[in-house]
Length: 311
Image 1 (cartoon, rainbow, N blue to C red):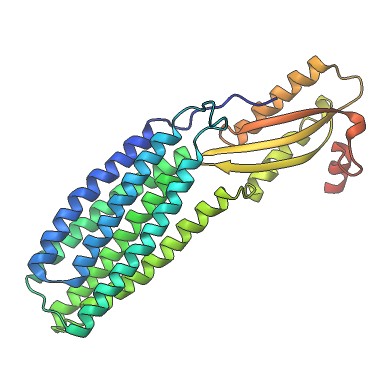
Image 2 (cartoon, helix red, strand yellow):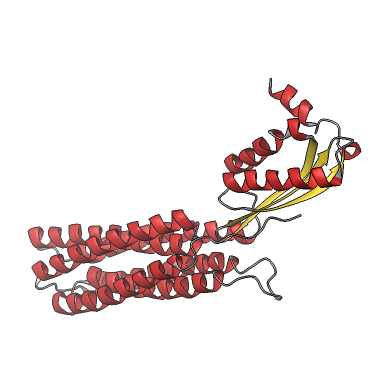
């Protein structure tokens, strides 16, 4: 028996992704203008980074729209994994962006660069930093509330962009103080290193979900605690506990053994209550319980035996 599917902030994820698209579009234009006026390679790399952020935001937007689509005959488990695929794509885009930044920075180190109107560049980058911090914080909050991998990846993009913008501010400030223009491309190279770290982290997180890695230990412990709390309700034991995740949804499969004399009707009702308990602990998990008689309990898997071992 499986629990009824639940919504995870349908619609709100799309709106959050749409905000990211709008902010990135505006910042790209502003940074391109600032890069052209100042000649700063660091600001140009920031514009490139924001361009990749825009692509990632578009990917996130369409992925969450698809993930919010109800299950159909071709996707009986729903479309939530579209978010994890999108997060992987976003992570790879981050890595591509870092490669472009390295190429541009090394080229300017070799050929040299001239920077003008530094004050204007500093003002633009400071404004972009503030915008990205505000929008990324909003996306992180929405990602936590809806368990959205795509929004979390998009937020990671913008947060990295904000931190690298701070680096650009420091670099431009040093150039203004010292007159040494080589500092500008060196800062861009340091930015690329930070971007690589973020990209690898986002890609690794998406892969873990796509290969059906089990839920974290604290969530698995919450499931076990919920099952064992039903020992007094006729649950004799359990095994074959399997967990995974797709987008914001958790999936739990488990075999539950009921004590001899428990009617099918009672076992079914108790299983429904257990499903509700697990879903309450895991924000609406999809729980599938296979009902079994007491003689299917394996040695050491009795609810009483588990309680005794814990003492």
